[in-house]
Every structure is written in C-alpha cells, then in structure tokens.
Length: 451
Image 1 (cartoon, rainbow, N blue to C red):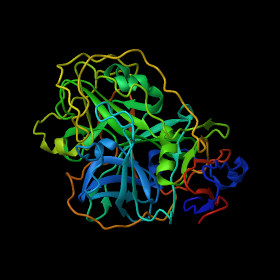
Image 2: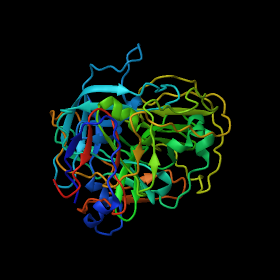
Image 3: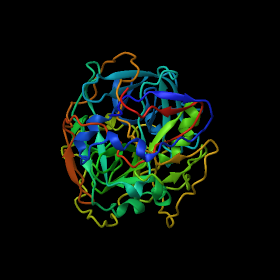
Image 4: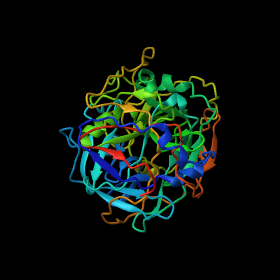
C-alpha cells in the first residue's frame, strides 16, 4: 500500500519520470471504488482568521495546494493581501489527525480574471518545502474517468480540529446539464477544462440555503481516485445570490490538469498526476491560460463566487435557493430572468456581471511545457503522515450540518451517496504509469512498498 511515499530527489530540472506498469501490479487488490474511499485521501479547507470558508482545496503535497483565487482578498493594486491569516486545515486519512498549515506564500494565477473567473486558481504554500512527507495526485485523461465524485467538506469545530462527514454526490451515467453553456460564456469557450453540474447540498451556514459542492474527484475503476477540479463560480437565474434565487443554477469547476506545470514552476518541485492509461500523454504549459478570458456575462444571469458562507448566514428567507427540478438529464435552456447589475468583485459571492450571450464553443489550445509535461501515471496519492502543523484556530462558522449527500438541485438525474467511513487499501491499479510535472528539483517515488 503506497500511502507514505517518500520522494527521492533527481538532479535534473523538469525531468519527466514514468515508472513501468509492471512495477505496480503486485500492490493492488481488485475492488470497486465508492464514495467511502474518499476517506483514503486527504482533503483540505481554506481557513481565514481561524474561520472556515466554503472553499475546498486540492492538496499537491504536505506543503502546497490549490485554492480558488476568488476565495482570497486582493488589494487595490490587484495583488493578493498577504497580511491576512490564511490557513489550511487538512483532513487526514483514517486514523490520522487533522493538521493546520499557516500560509507563507499565496500566489493567484497570473491570468486570473476577477470578472469572468477565468483561471480561477491560486497556490498556497506553508510549512517546510524541503521536507515533503507525502503528495497527492491530480487527475488527468477525463474521458477515461468512470465516475466523478463531488464533495462538500465541512468542519464541526475549527478549534477542536474535527470534521463532519463529507457530503458526496456521484454523477456516473449523468449527462452535463444542457443549460451550462448558455448560462456562462467562459465555460462555453473552455469546456475541455471545466466541469459543470446543477446539484447542490445544504449549506452548513444556513439550512435554508443550498451550497455548491467544493471539489471534484475523478474515479478510475476499480480502485483509484484523484482530485480533479475545484469549485470556481455559479451562474444564477432569478436572483443575485445562491440563497433565495428563483431560477436555475449552474455550478462550474476549474480542472487542475492544465495548471500543473504552472504549479510546479511556482513551488519549485514536482506535481504528481494520474491517468489510468499508461500510454496517455499530456504536456502542460507554465503559461497556460483559458481562452476568451474577457468574455462578457450573459443577460439575465448573475455570477457568484468565493466563500459562500457569509451571504448564506445573512439570508433570512424560509425557502432557500431554488431547486433545478426542471433540468432533465438531456438539459434544457433555462428561461431568462431579471438582469442584475454587473460587478467585478474578486471576493465573496458577487463577481461576474450580466450582459449578453456568447458565441459558439471553441476548445483551448494545448501547448507543451518547456520544463516537461504530464504523462498519465499510476499510484494514486492517498498517502500518510499529515501535513505541517501550525496552530489550531477558533471561531467555527455555521451550524455543523452537512452529513452525507443531502443535496437538492437535481439537474442531470444524479444520485447522492454519503461519504461514510471505510478503511480500504490505497489505490494504484496495476497497468498504469506514473508521471509528474517538474519544477525545481525533481523527485521520483520509491514505489517498492510502504514508507
């Protein structure tokens, strides 16, 4: 079981490392992945001033991770406000204690657009980058996924370092809601690198509100899961907030795959990727940015993003946000609603704006990374040894709800499953190959056993 993989340094900068499929075949037990297997993988929440946010993170390793840039606070200069108390709460695997990391460096993607939410990612670093205890894998080769698990992680107590059972929804066999493209021009122009869904789950900040899921995981049957995307923004008809809107809602998730070379360059070390097909190859560019990043909004649609808990706590209505009960598996274009005034805030639930519809879809170009690309890999990083510890923190946000599933907004006919406990061996289906995007000193896995 390859849970605690130590990283062996390789001197060459940007070297692509692939392990042969045969090296892994003896490490696996054939089984079927369910949502309970998420307990085998670390998750994380973005914490500000000891208060949890709705922003989930995608862990790269024990000292760095992705978060949505719209969850950060920016100065008038457009730079991230580094003076705030940014922390990372890391939920360990079964039997592993919660760890907190205090951010030492926060970098938004250089092409992040706070109006359209193009390239809505940032890298947070914490702890000792010279002492990496574990890493996790970024999912690649989306057509080869057998399922997608969307998660909503919440803490029952920040100061007590305790977690609620994650809400999880599975989208196996479900079509993308047909309204996704019509509601958001950025998605329409970059469908290769977004996920879109209509489901939500009850907000822990207000039981009358629904909240989008925070992260998406690619599932490779029979036994692998890898973090794939983070929540970026939502398009709303019939209101200017998630709570209390009367029309359909569509929720967009930025896929991490094309940003791995940028992350490797920024952190100065490898970012590990996973694909089930040993022959899969993809080269990520350090300068990748979504096309049509200046796309206008859609008339009648309000776009929201960032930490959803403040507006949810303030909502006083009894009905909560509308369910997409009219959205069928095949999709239907939602009716237009009253247009809201456009805004350009980069924080908290009110970015985007509303203008006219977009043109036909086009796919983003894929360029080769100068420092090596991402080839499909194996050894899906559940790992052990919790991350770096930097204090607890107080002030719990919301009412500690959100136990498995509890979702509405059933666009696409998906089913909910709960993330209950299960202690399964960690991944790595034989027949895959291992890869990473290089940056700084490159490393290779010791794949011969546990560490």
